[in-house]
Image (cartoon, rainbow, N blue to C red):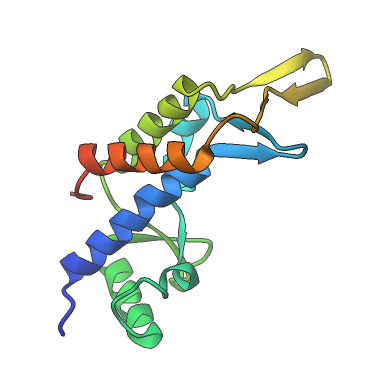
Length: 156
């Protein structure tokens, strides 16, 4: 079965949305949770969406070697942007929807009650957190992912 570039990019976009949901909250020691400020999310949205080739093999509709070749091709075409070197191991999808999706997800985590920023004064500061108990992270993550899929069905 021939897999088109569009089908491969759709798969990568789907994984990107999932990564954004996972990477926009932070789990601290002691089972505490927090999220990022909108300033941090706006300054480098692609940092929340970096994908690693090795993590995508299991769901990819291609063999590992073919997938690696196609990723390098998509990078050379500008559909994917390399990260952490130019060997195609890590990349982010080149999409106008990336930054809005990251901002939307950070806002969703904030609305769910996850704090952001720091507390304390001077040199002694700590991240604002809440206990993870009582929050169903799996259900929230799945719900946020569904919201993103509905709002941004395609990377284009």
